Length: 395
Image 1 (cartoon, helix red, strand yellow):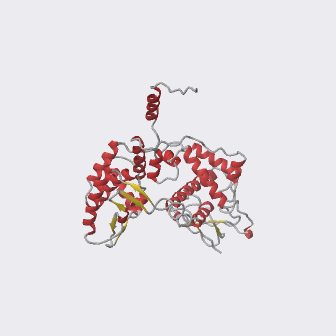
Image 2 (cartoon, rainbow, N blue to C red):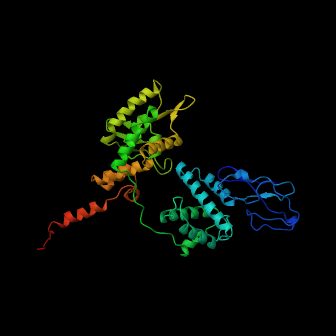
Image 3 (tube, rainbow, N blue to C red):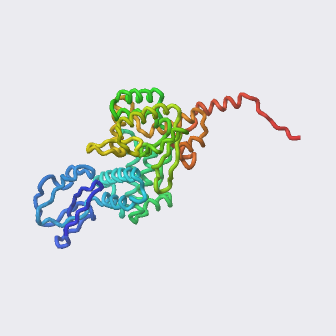
């Protein structure tokens, strides 16, 4: 019976193990092995030549008749696919996408170590303490895609994702290593908050002004509104026209992060700096729809003439064009952190900033979006200590 295992991308690849009648045993299920006896010439590249588990799956062709039956070649990727499919109802869309990328990176790193003989298996249910230790050490030493050492924060995240994934496959090795203190999870201060400077914002605004048509209208709205309300990429993309409150200058967030799980609808403020841009956009929106009606705040007309919400890919292309025209590398999330940090610099309390960002606690706000700057903190010390201390003398 032929069994083919699909990878995360949905493509298929296979390897072969000899049946007991061939007089040989496989080194490991899911690992390449050689049969004893008559060997047939392969068509195409030799098995494993130029192997890249994330590359062109089609380069592994079928072998001629008479070869042993097939089995799963990439057990880690196959298990990852099953794991992600089983968590569709729990993880959000963005989380699923990120988990998929993380698990593919782990699969690639494990295969690299396996080919160099540093781990004994790539099967998630059979990874041992030595295999996990080799993988963690590898993450400490290998460079990231930016040719820099992997950040401790990234290592912490990979270890956490690996632990969840292995536990789901009935292998508590990472949890056990944590419990008996055989696994040191990297610790490091939180990463610096990435914000856009005034000059960078001006350059992006000029780039949006240079764009024509409906795409330019949308770009100008995003550049003006996102740093003035702090909405996330998905939240503004799926916002409705009815969510705008032009009387109190607020916008309702109907599709927040964690929608359907732990989050509910909330509102965000629209600062005065973006209010005229919003009014201009509404006039341009009316001209774009030309009498048609749609509930989306930022509608899009597709190639077949239908009107709907923007999908994530066109949003990414619009952001990429703004980057190219402005010469500023940024992410839409940086507009959110810029909104928070500017508010904090203006003296808005961290509790108020956290409320505007719709966080449950100020810890998330201070960790990822807004912190008091060192100069401001030290200036506060100077101001307070410049005055003589007030002593209360008991009677």
